[in-house]
Image (cartoon, rainbow, N blue to C red; front, side, top):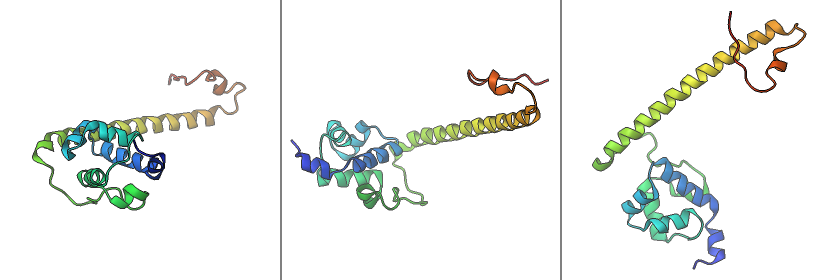
Length: 153
């Protein structure tokens, strides 16, 4: 059993950074555990605050995810050691990396479409309110129960 003092010294922010780095690498606990040779339950215990990692586990975790040790331990510096440099993806991870890149593209395209739609609604709304400020009952009263789509003439 890990002492409370040791658990406190290994802060929650370090745990969050380790978990965040794993998630940013798009790895499950099972996948990371297999790649560094530790049990999934061991990694889960670290992320959930039940265990303090050994130095060997911490070194393996940091090395596998290619993250900056200083960032993990203190939150300072850049997270990613790769910077803008290209690196060789292990052969067995290429297909997965292609799928991850496609998800990023889809998410970015969706977000751009949503932003354009929202900007169009804002533009329309600003013009609508500017034209109707003089009216006795502004549209806000009609919209008090939520957003309402207006029909254009």
